[in-house]
Amino acid sequence: MGETRKIAAIVVADVVGFSRLAGADEDRTLARLRALRSDLIDPTIAVHAGRIVKRTGDGILIEFRSVVDAVRCAIEVQNGLIERNAGLPPERRIEFRVGIHLGDVVEEADGDLMGDGVNIAARLESICEPAAICLSEDAYRQVKGRLDLAVTDLGPRQLKNIAEPIRVYSLEVGKASQANRAQSKRRSWLAPVGIGIAALIVLVATGVWYFLAANRTTPVAASAPAPAVASVPPPAEAAHLSLVVLPFTNLSGDPAQDYFADGVTENLTTDLARIRDSFVIARNTAFTFKGKAIDAKEIGKELGVRYVLEGSVQRDQGRVRVNAQLIDAQSGAHIWADRFEEDVADLFKLQDEVVARLANSLGNELVKAEARSDRRITNLDAFDLTMRGRALRFESLRRATRESNNAARVLFEQALAINPDDAGALAGDAATYLFDKVAGWTSADVDYDAKILGQADRSIAIAPNDPAPYSTKSLYLSYVLHRTEEGLRAADAGLALNPGSAILYHASGSAKNLLGMYAEARSDTLHAIQLSPRDPNLGVWQSTLAASDIGLGNFDDAITDGHRAIDAGYRTFPVYSNLAVAYAMANRIDDARAAVAEALKLNPKYSVKLMSESYHKPPAIVEALRKAGAPEE
Image 1 (cartoon, helix red, strand yellow):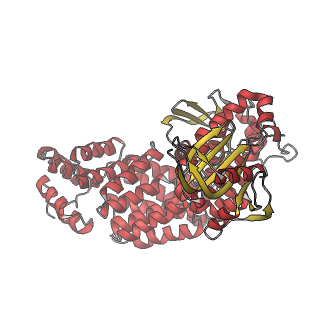
Image 2: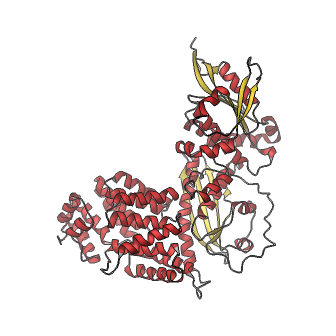
Image 3: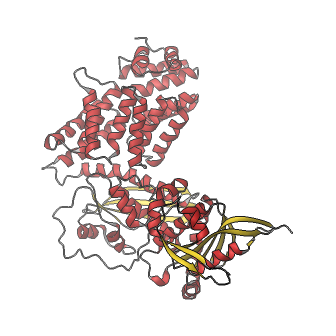
């Protein structure tokens, strides 16, 4: 008859009050339910190896091979629903009851499941509270020692049409998700986390969880009352790096897509708030402006901020388009804008990438905006000097000039004279000395270990969430001291706290190049470019890509990367050295010799011996340099 009897973990879920929801607004309810299925429920089931047996209108029957997988999946879906419902009136919330049982089932030839195992799961679902999960004793026994669950023992319950009473356990979803988030998220980018919990983790647990929280979306009603800020006079001058991220507008024409735009807004607010010395208006206040056409200058005056970020998200079938604009709240002028489109494969992973890209770009743009500001030019403090120093550092990276690097150092050291514990100035000063070492502008009377490692470590001790000193430390350990394993560990330590940092992905790629891990190095560096495609470091990163391609034997790609680095303004002797090697290995000797000549112009000490002994180039690279005509000493 084609039947198979087996033991399976069965999940039955059903929408609470579906008839009421559909009766009030059928089209909207069905659209929201379809969006939840495609963007949350079905992907989460797939990640946990579940099989959707059948749908019953507003319900679903799912089979899992493991009760642990079934419970993890249910927790993630329930938390996702809780967060999407936050701020919505009760009559508009889509909530599920979930029942889970481990038992004997019969699988028919068409894949359908029948038997007591299914019936018990269905009865458990029917006695569940909204947004809860009920487990039978058989199911609970499988997970109680493997997952840290917060549960309520409901005792033996007589379920409809089930002969014997079943002991039932009700899972307290919010508490359980806090305990299980780390383990379940390693398996899935889709695990939702309560917004209050996520914010606490970000602030108290030093930001490791940022990307784990990046797929949360919490719509807030546009009709929320305005915050009581009118009675509190704004400061005479807005704080340094003060910003409000206005709710991104959903241009998709589908209200069910609001959660994606809201998620971008919310997580971008969280990430920008982690920038040292920044002041970012909380998302609850920012969301009171949702759907309202208010002048940026009025918002800046009301909230006491210098900058307003606004944007839009448009999802069209398999593509998402994102626009963002940074506005000077005093003048109303647009400072910066960006627009990009991405394919939708994993929607929540895409949300992570959107937020990371915007945060990397905005971090740079805010520095430049502060450096250009003349509002305090007659009374510069340590912060102002640090911002101006960082802006000059950007110029030195773009143009690779010793003059701008030195000018940036002067500003950082002036800031340190005012405040010796300014973490940004310490990190910036260390970076200027690192650039001297990389470009060959060294001086015998400078203690580079103290200037680079010493200041980077002090900066990390003061501001452990800032990615800049980790990057500087990693590059110095790897490239200069040849303690490459330590350099990679420094990059990894920074990435643990800043998983969306482009500069740390580049530092990781640089270390991996030196360890011969060329494919991984190339992947890390390309990810850095993806996260910040207009970064001041772009020329540096292209040069690192060239080194990866040389290691992989892709000499034509290495030549292209080298020229892109030069076109980006990064004209240092290591760039031309890489070009010389790539040309020599491609048997383009005339071009190789021309590249050697350019390297010698930039560093008269450039030689085979320098690259072999000081830069520890492998034998194949050394021979290519000889072939290119580099001087021996």
